[in-house]
Image (cartoon, rainbow, N blue to C red):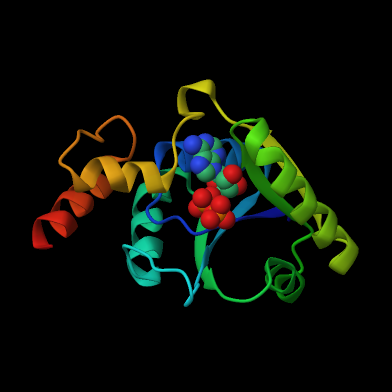
Length: 159
Ligand code: ADP
């Protein structure tokens, strides 16, 4: 079985993430979306909430599983015997950093990284921008799936 990992923070998952995950799901037998538990980075949603949202909006693909992890992505890959990471590239600005990580991951564990060019519709889209817009009551309906939009509205109406 050919498996691939899509690692990230997903705070929260956006239509840009979904574009990459859905395209990867057509290329591989199974896509493991690995949600990073990062205690030093403040997140809007807990890792459980983030994983829950991803599971909900990817169930239609049928071959996507969601897991949580902390530590190195390559250790996650090694433990599960998954040889490939997929990362989305939005713009040249993503490239420098992503290239370094990919080279480091290959050096550390022989794990390969495949880059997928983002659909230009989503090249401006990031979780942090979505949160900023939602925080001030902006319309994020074209940027995130419906259940995520509802959660954003609820979260910001609480604060
Ligand atoms: P990280 O915090 O590790 O950058 P993210 O949750 O922001 O994690 O992103 C996870 C993955 O999704 C990365 O490969 C990133 O490049 C990709 N990604 C993020 N936003 C978009 C987007 N708008 N379109 C396509 N891919 C994206």
